Image (cartoon, rainbow, N blue to C red; front, top):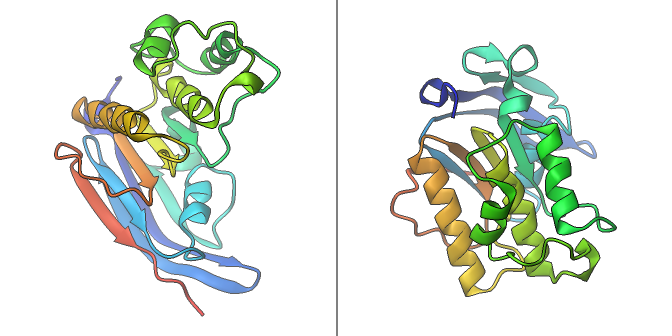
Length: 210
């Protein structure tokens, strides 16, 4: 990954309200290349909202996001970041291959070719299958295959293990671990107990405000 050894994500004094209720305030953290951050907290504490702010899908009420020493909006932050949310982010009417070609056209090519990525996520042979015919677990693995074919330093993942069986969970754990071990970064939420020794994991617990 280009300049990955220098990548840093800094969040400074971030605050957010939802429906006039304070979710979090004066939130500060930093993630560097080769590190991951797990957001913990009860439902309603603002984990998904924070991820959406980091992705630019929602504005914070105050605070700054800084990428490699520059404000996110004045840097390559949105080019260098990839998001996988609760929804799988695929176009149901297109085939598996068409979805990945579409993702590749919008991003910078990564270290995996499409066929290699499909093999990696156990979807080899599903190239021509319309996405609406896939199981929930297969759709989740397809959404994560998009991360492999594009070059994104920062992965932002909201419950990436949803709809996956034990083999699928082990697969995604290995993909995240490999990404981190090669100098990538990840910010994620998960109800799954992360036990990956090489994840270089930091944790932040968000406390629901009343």
